[in-house]
Length: 95
Image (tube, rainbow, N blue to C red; front, side, top):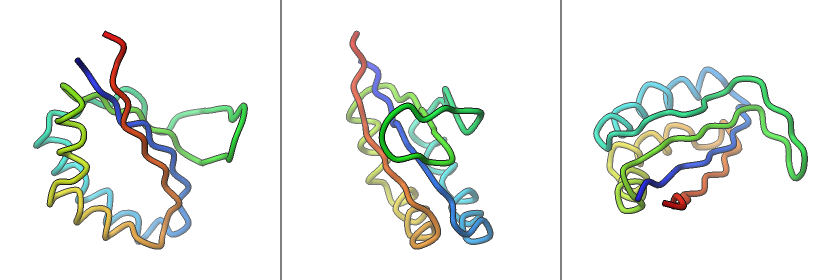
């Protein structure tokens, strides 16, 4: 059953965030991630407002979690530290 990363991001330092953008694709490629939404126009209806919203599809929940905990993504997260507010949830699909 597919699973999805749902990420909300507000970037405070684009130059530093570019380091994350250079590293994160290594993890996404390794774990077969498919981007369904990335950036684009959005409207916040409730809750905190973020600049960007990302939805990434994975084969299953275990793969989505493995990507998040991978060495590749850990390096990307470290590069992003302190330059962005990020909220990521991993959600299993309905079927």
